[in-house]
Image (cartoon, rainbow, N blue to C red; front, side):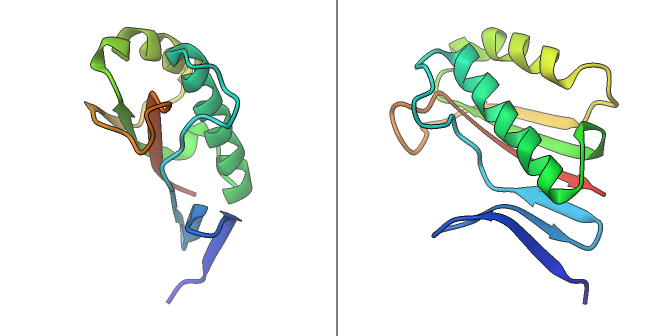
Length: 117
């Protein structure tokens, strides 16, 4: 059995878990105090994702799959504008984006990622 490493541990979850050459994040929402706008929340979530990737010893190129939940699909284009700038020219991970009621009404976006080291 491969060793399991957990990073950014909170009372309920680890921010990212590494098992062998695979990693998976928890769902990431905007940091407290982030603006209520979708662009700002998307930026906040992606910065947190970058930090979790670093903790796991990974980078954007290691991403296999990104799952995005939007509280309102009308924010799809604005979210994509920020996401496209962030992801850049790396090999694109698989991605899904769905509309969903999120855990708190202030959350406009949640992102979860998996990847290989």
